[in-house]
Image (tube, rainbow, N blue to C red; front, side, top):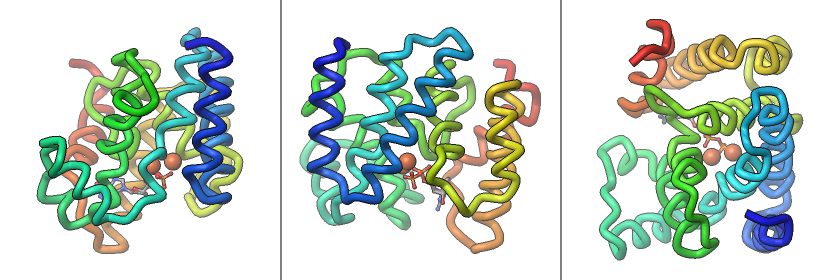
Length: 193
Ligand code: DGI
Ligand code: FE
Ligand code: FE
C-alpha cells in the first residue's frame, strides 16, 4: 500500500478507536515498522497490519457477534465465551471489506494477532510481538527483557511472551483458546513444521 493509503487508514483509526486504543495502535504500528527494518520485512505491510490489528476492538460484543452472524464467520466455543477474542477475526474481515487490504499476509497478521498460530509468517510474528512490547504496554512480566530480545531473536522473544501469556491466563482462570496453546507448543518444540 502507498503512503497516502496508510495515512487514510491511520485517520480512520483515530476516529474509530478510543484515545487509549489509538495510542496503543500507533505504538504497535511503529514498533512493527522497526522490527520490519530489523528483520527485512516490507515496512509498509507492517505499518498497515499494525494500524488495523485492533480495528474491531472498540465495538460491543453484540456488534462483533452480529457481524459474524451476518457474514457467516464461524465462532468457536472459546470465542463465544470470550467474545473479545473475536476482535481479531472481525478485524481481519473489516481490513479486507472496509479498508481495502488485499495482501493475505497482512490479513493473516490481523487474524492471528491474539492467539498466534503454529507456523506464523515473519509478518505475523512481528505483529504478535509488537502488540506485546509496544511502548504503551505496562502489565506484562519480563517486558524489558522481551523488548530487547525481540530485536535479537524473534522466535525466542515469541516463546517467552507466549509462555508468560499462558501463565497469566492460567493464573486468572481464563478460558484458553486451543490455538493459543497450540502456538505455544509449536514454538516450544522448536518452531518447525
Ligand atoms: O487487543 P490487545 O489488548 O491489544 O491485545 P490482544 O489482542 O493480543 O489481546 C491480549 C489479551 O488476550 C491478553 O490479555 C491475553 C489474551 N489472550 C491471548 N490468548 C488468549 C487470551 N485470552 C483468552 N481468554 N484466551 C486465550 O486463548
Ligand atoms: Fe488485539
Ligand atoms: Fe493490540
